Image 1 (cartoon, helix red, strand yellow):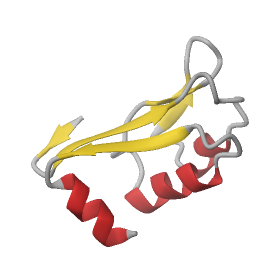
Image 2 (spheres, rainbow, N blue to C red):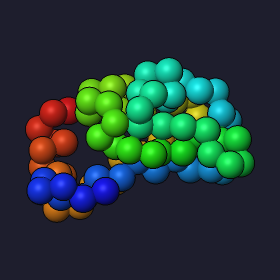
Image 3 (tube, helix red, strand yellow):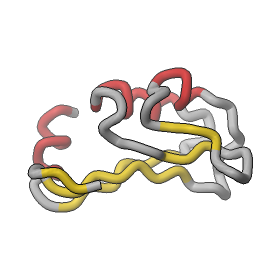
Image 4 (cartoon, rainbow, N blue to C red):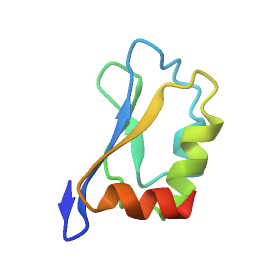
Length: 80
């Protein structure tokens, strides 16, 4: 996804995801169950960035990462 602040994507590693659903409970507009019954990132802007970062932190399998490019890198670094 692109915006004026750069590109941000939410990536869920399908080899690590166990479909616990924590990400969807914490950030329901950013994650969904995909066709393989595993979590997928659908919209990094669906929830506020704090909720997305919380979903990443609370994933029991550490399967979620936030991929940024451009000015978004610095903005996310400043929020951590």
